[in-house]
Length: 152
Ligand code: DQA
Image (cartoon, rainbow, N blue to C red):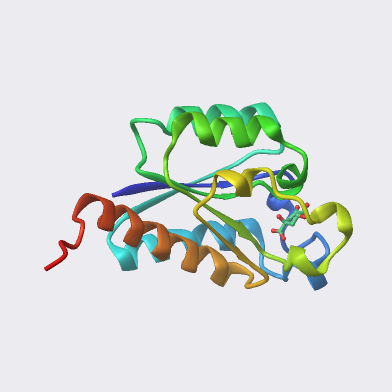
C-alpha cells in the first residue's frame, strides 16, 4: 500500500516557527517520523511539502493511480483553498486531514476547513502523533475497502 502525506505552507519551518504552537521538532524530524510509521505498518508513506497552492493541487492530481490514499495538512490553505478541496474531490482518493495544533480552539478564521469537506476524518491538536493516527486510520480504511468484512 502506498499513501501520500502532503504538508502545506510553512510546515517546512517547523521547529523555528511558533514552537509553543507547533512544537520544537523540525520538518526533517516529521518526515522521519512518518517514514517510521510507514515501516511499522509495512506500507509506503511518501511525503510532499509545498508553500504553493498550485503545487499542492498538482501533487493531489498526480497521486491518482500512484497512491491509494492521502493524508493532508493543508496548513493555512485549509481555511482558504477551494482549489485543494476540488482537487481532493476530483481524484476521489480517501483522504484524512491533520493539524498539529487544535484549530478548533484558535482564531475564528481557522474554524472553516475547505479541505476537510473532502476528508473522511480529521485529527487535530496531537502534534506528530496526529499523523500517526491519520496514517493508521487511512491504512485500515483502505484495507477494509479492499477486503470488506462480510455480514454473517
Ligand atoms: C495548521 C493550522 C493552520 O491554521 C495553520 O495555518 C498552519 C498549521 C496546523 O497544523 O496546526 O499553518 O494546519
